[in-house]
Image 1: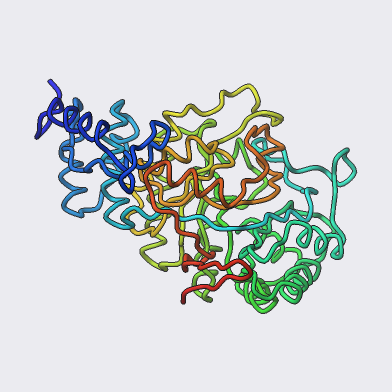
Image 2: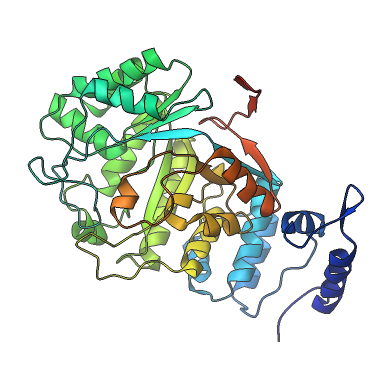
Length: 416
């Protein structure tokens, strides 16, 4: 028997009535304008599930109580994705209402040369390998300019762990971009890159972060976290810093006033216990520092990697990962559905399963497309607005710090 507090039949009849009578400014709504119908349907249907294990979790969520490890494992293990989605959407709407965020950004990957040989990666190259590249500073500035319009509010800068480039190259890259594009937010260098640059420059992590901040870095992306489990990291990314070092680097960044994102790579050789461990460690650090802005689950793309024998993630797992993340990470302001990896269609659906952000325009994305991603290299602003509206959400353009961006025909302003 399916547990419900109201009649699904009554809800179906009510929805059918709305479908037959919904209007937009007095005009009949065409069938393809589904976002209007979604918007006008009351979101009052009750929680329903066949899985009795979800009932105490539902009580906790609605009471605002924190979920524990056992709760998270139940959420991963249940087949009732709609019930999990109901709970995640309830939390998402409590936090953000109907708002769904996006930004106009530009990715810059200055080099794909990397000393690591991660089995999860199709982007990195040895410096003498075919396809290896390293941008001269002027080339990097030209790349930024080629995808730049007055609309761009963020440069997202990540790359490989180059064996020869000095730390000064990266400082000059950021300061040069800041000089040329002073109004653009510099979200630059993962925790892995920071730790590697510190080692090469013979500096402490804190000193490295402070020099980056002085050069113009405004915040850090969340990449390189992968999965914190030592067992998994030894197999997929043995040459990177370990999970504790990633967390320590993020902690230091937050302590000097640099916000960051956090990621988790899922859908490879990890299990549910590894995913839960990862989420709980991020939640604990957020309790301590409050420095994380957004959590971004990253679907693994095995093509062109040493792990290409693995399957790609399913839509069910992608949606469940978004929903579980929203429920467990109760202290993270935002959960992002990264359309480049999940596809725009899954990202759109996820806006009803816990996500409140679908990232930005990007222009050119290399890392996941080298791993076989078949999504577009970039989307235009109106594409993102359409995806959000057709999900029944209210598009809110933001800057990197989630301040609303207001546009005119020739300029934009950021609400502080």
